Length: 235
Image 1 (cartoon, one colour):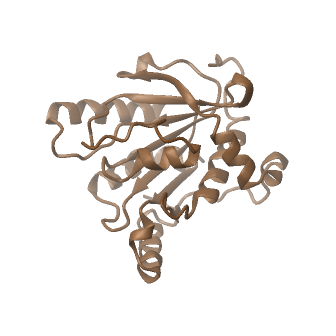
Image 2 (cartoon, helix red, strand yellow):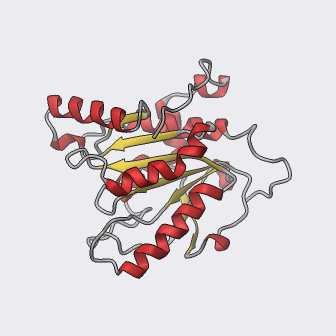
């Protein structure tokens, strides 16, 4: 994957002023919006959508629950790969939706039938390539295993949109299971594998990287404001 384009040096005033506590309070408003087995079943939306992707055992559901400070918002199955729907969660105070989190099915789990894997690869590819209000992608990765073949395929898939400015972040989950030197090595490797892309350590147990991730997601809310067509329908 090629190097990500430079980001603007000066963030919007609303983003510069917000604190991690405020960003987390906003994420805490997350509530279930809808679930879809096919792309055409998703609602047309003009609000920014932040997608969470990753292998089935990368800790994606745990990360979403930690960021939203809810224990069961995203379903964390004891059998990875069982969730085969795109789940949307609305964000916004007083019932107003101003952003959406999209929890995409985990990929790469061997126990899922091959036909299901192929079907969801197509659905995910279509979503990541064509969803007009996609404002950011968060990839969850277990740093003990590093980015694997399917992770690299996904990176290559979204490369054209990333080169056009789509924000992308790799969260190295379960960082508490590594020593400091191992963390530094894993972080350096992840940045190298994404060709200088954004990557950070994350631990739900130790709350490492939670504030930074919350602020990054908050930033996507403002990043998309000038990039959506005015005629797009709202959620």
